[in-house]
Length: 191
Image (cartoon, rainbow, N blue to C red):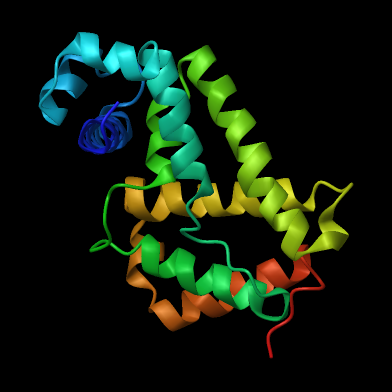
């Protein structure tokens, strides 16, 4: 296979994956078909299946890519609580981008197989990252509770549009969230 053909194959695969991320995030697993994703990528449905095996295979790769992207969780144990709070407030502001791993999860969770794929990726990438950055959460429920707080805040502020959360100044929200995350992850203290 020539290098030009490999580059074209890689570009085609990447275009399909990007179209899959956007479609599944906007419409959920059950809300979009392979044909619509293929059309958005400028390819045939047959080509989508050739690269990913099936709609489920494409969704699994979309979940993998989405859950490895650090949209809220930081890498510094000393500032983890502060960084999560700041990123969460920024990412859930009414003006923030609507393409997020949270919306992928929310809009696909009703499908049992999609929920299973999401759970596997959340545990393998997101929870594991919390364990890595804050090792004292390992063997406890605290990493999962941190993720539940993030998901609940995201739902109420970004999706539901809570008047209280959207009407509070962002510094106050950050402070409240930081204090909560410091309680859940005691080793994650602000400097």
